[in-house]
Length: 200
Image (cartoon, rainbow, N blue to C red; front, side, top):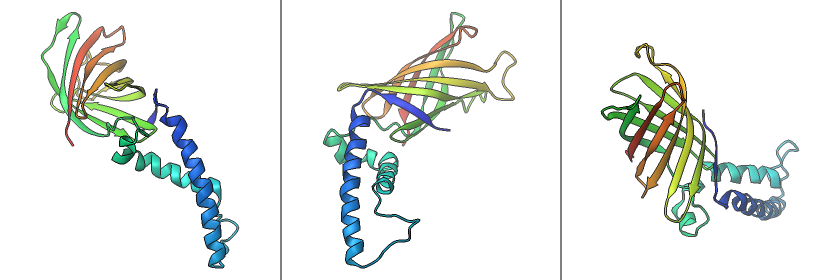
């Protein structure tokens, strides 16, 4: 299930303001149009209501419009699009011993305000993790994704595996690479390096 994520971008303050203004003008225009065609909607369907239109515009922007390239070229949106499948490797250091890298697949579901980051180990079939909270620090040069996750072992995992929490910090390079590190709870004493490339 997706959860909200925070960002340092001012767009989350400004875009709702722009949508509110758009909703007011759209409401006035739609009301005038309905009068012109002599149609009065039923009381339970106030299609020209400012709040109704704002809800429509906000929902559309949250799921679709925030990805539009022209809004990004204008500087309205700076939140990077991480949504999609990523493949790469994780190399862990457990109890001071560096392990060999193993393949992982990361699936990120994202819209303008919510995200979920899932990490799977298809070859080892040992565990899977999903994010619990996340934040993005966006600058002119880079984007840093920081998230807390919960790791759950699969039924066939080794007996030493158990559910634990951890934190990952990944830096977006260009639009198709995420690289960084992670660490787990103190009982695991596990740190490591994550390298990912976008698949689609």
